[in-house]
Length: 209
Ligand SMILES: [Zn+2]
Image (cartoon, rainbow, N blue to C red; front, side):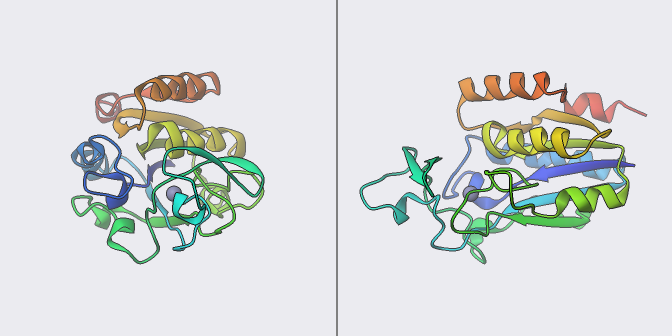
């Protein structure tokens, strides 16, 4: 069984969003083509889904400002602008995304005391979202991953997929993803590759039988 995981394709990470990834929305038509071909048996989408007082928000730390390193629960934490607050427009999927093609939505980042870049578990790797169990029960054999942002949530999800889903072939679809920092994107791709994640393009996927 082939599964596609769409990471955080939400308004907040697209142009006009509170934590916009450069050209994030450019992936939407590519992702729609991947879904439309019907080549995946299961399409799962994650949503960053924060309470308004989430501890990753610079606004919760007096004296801090967005995109500075700070601490959360004693651990290093990038301070972000308020983004993807539960129930807000910012947290909705991009309006161009074919949500009818999504079989399952996995929310993450609901605990205000810790961030969750990965769709599988919190950043301290303790609390699970439930996605790994869901995919294991579904009996998937391969998992393709794409979305926003490559250097944070996509990378963390791909690495966790490798660590938590033994025997599942994991691939990153590069042109169906966008990152925040070009240097970090390169490093993220190298890190994923070193962990056994295949690096492919949507053209590779669409040309497969
Ligand atoms: Zn977030």
